[in-house]
Image (cartoon, rainbow, N blue to C red; front, side, top):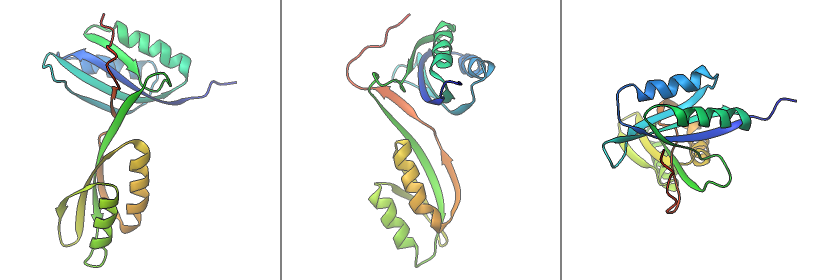
Length: 171
């Protein structure tokens, strides 16, 4: 029987140096993981960046992957936020351009306000909405807004941090 696969959110604190993202992405794809989302950005310390990747894998394969990532040069720490014991906060951002007219514009703006989304652009025939939330809330938002006609969307994928004062173990 094949082990069940599930979605995992990995977060790697890395040195902010040329080629680190390519090595991390290459290691993941080289081991047969399909990277569903990939984010990278600087941290509060300009010497470091945080890479957040979402992959689908069984637990055993992911354990081997985390160990391999942790051994890469310039990788400081790696965390798998999908484990039950790791309390974390995860969010993603979506920009969504929705078709509207004078009748539906108010309805669309009401839906956006119910989700605490922000209308960032209004034109005669479209509204652009910015929404931040977890994967389930974004899915619920998209389900309600889709009937109006989504013309375009851009999504960041998850970014995540652990809750509380737990310190990451450095190499």
